[in-house]
Image (cartoon, rainbow, N blue to C red):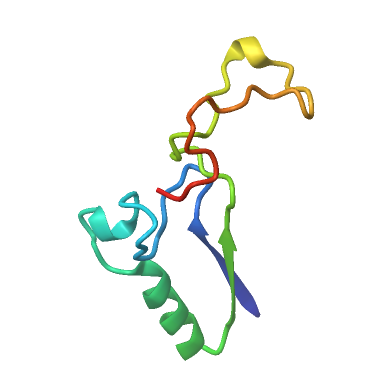
Length: 91
């Protein structure tokens, strides 16, 4: 093994690190510790290279459009748009 990759933020919005952008993170989960930091330190201690995947898509964000079966098949550029006036604003 030469490298390892960890999903630091999943497209469901959950972050495995502490962040001020959202309370949907490991900081507010029962474990509470920064798993990304622990992972990076442990992999470096073993001499492995590290990659972190961070999904820009965030299903947990309130303005992310809720896709339903009625929206299928998905057509590029024809997705329903958010209706909230806070589009683009960080939580």
